[in-house]
Image: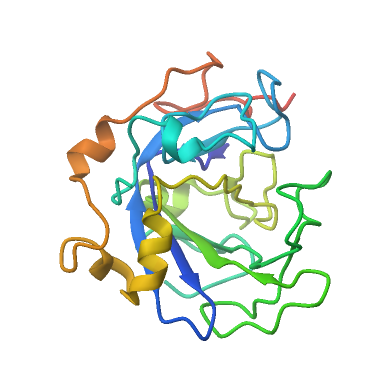
Length: 251
């Protein structure tokens, strides 16, 4: 069993849906890989399945949404310091690895920072990719920046077909135990230093040009990104260095 969930690279895209012209796209290294989920299972140690965490080092098992997490962290794994697509896992080895894309809903009800199912306070009008989204409904009238995750896993070490199941199925599985590929998800906890996000959205800069070329946002080196870390709260073998007989938390 292969556990997809380590040694990956994540790029995060954030843009205001039309008519805005501003957009950010930046890479983030892994902060930690452990079974913690402060959004869906706050305070539970360990949580139900493994998460790859990127971003600021204020991450912990219990995070109050009313706290300005952008100001609490002292470092971040993201660069800004302030193949064909399929709906499921590929049926054949991918020359360059596997990428998953998540587009988050961008219409807010204007009242609630969260909801019991962590979904109802937002509404999704996206059409896939970075195409112009539909208008926000009256129930969720506030247009928010469009957030997207692009996560790439280097699975090339498993491209030898002799390592795949003899029945022709693919060998990968998400950390929730999903072997089909439909169950992947992303969680986004908002936190930017001061007015940095507003400055970027107001500047009309696009993607990496929001950094060194324009000076809108400060950037940091890859070494600085990779040096940011948090201490693991859950101590267990999650298969970072070797094969594991079963997924953590799945019995």
